[in-house]
Length: 181
Image (cartoon, rainbow, N blue to C red):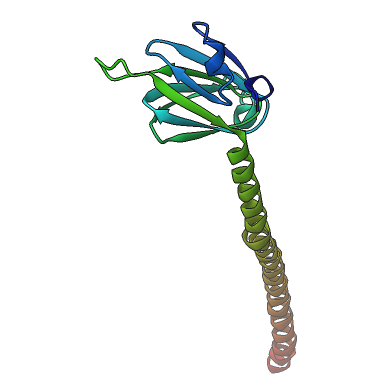
C-alpha cells in the first residue's frame, strides 16, 4: 500500500523517499510538522514520542465548519481519522529530548474497527434505541388518552351536578308551593 493512495502529505522539510515508501510509517523530527488529508478511514498510532495533533474539517467535524480539535498523543495512543479530515501533527518532545516521533497509519485497522462499531451501533439501534422510542411514543399516546379521559370525566361530573341540582329544584319547588297554598 503506497502512501500516495492512502494519504496526501506535506512535511515542513522534505522526507527521504525511503521513509515515504514505508507503507504508512513516518519519523518526525523535533520542531517538524506533517500535514495529512486521508482518502479513507484510518488510525494514526504514535509508536514513539509525543505529538500534537490538530484535526480540522471533514469526517465527524464536517457539519461544524471552521472547527478543529487538538489532541496530544503519547506513545501507544491511537486516533481514528475520517476521510477528508485535515490532520496536522507536530513533534512535541519534552525539553532536552532529541528523539524523533514515530507515526504509523493503518487503514485496515480502521475499517475493522468501523465495521465492528457499525455492527454494534446497529445492534444498539435495534435492541435499545428503537424499543425506547416505541415505549416513549406509547407513553405519550397513553398520557394523551388519559388526559382526554379526565377531561371527559370532569365534563360528565359537571353535567351530573347540574342535572342533580335541577332535579332537586324540581322536587323541592312543588313542595314549597303546596305548603304555602
